[in-house]
Image 1 (cartoon, rainbow, N blue to C red):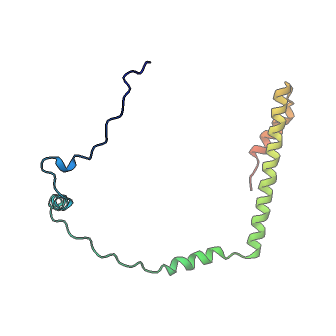
Image 2 (cartoon, rainbow, N blue to C red; image 1 turned 90 degrees about the vertical axis):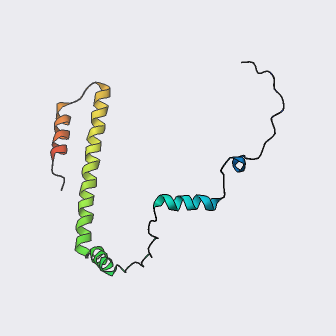
Image 3 (spheres, one colour; image 1 turned 30 degrees about the vertical axis):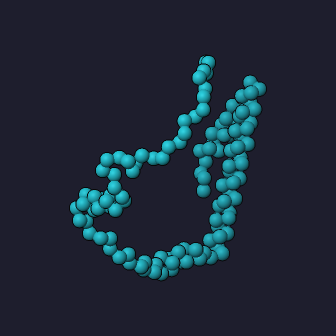
Length: 120
């Protein structure tokens, strides 16, 4: 593509909004806006929020747990972690077997039983 006739840029001129017919100040716009709204009511006073002490108390009760509950959660989390690690190990063996072209039937059965097993 050939560019020809490159010359100086035209000078920047002032905006012509003030030169348009019927253009007036911002106060006139506000008056038209109020007329268009149709005399809507003025905005009401914003009330201060009420304290939410009841919710704070409920959250505090939920956060307070005894030591046995924490121990039970820790054990359950450990069992789930071990189960996940076992499934990932079996899936890795499955991938390896597929890549090598030899996959023992017993491995598939073990994986299926592990996946079907109870999660706790």
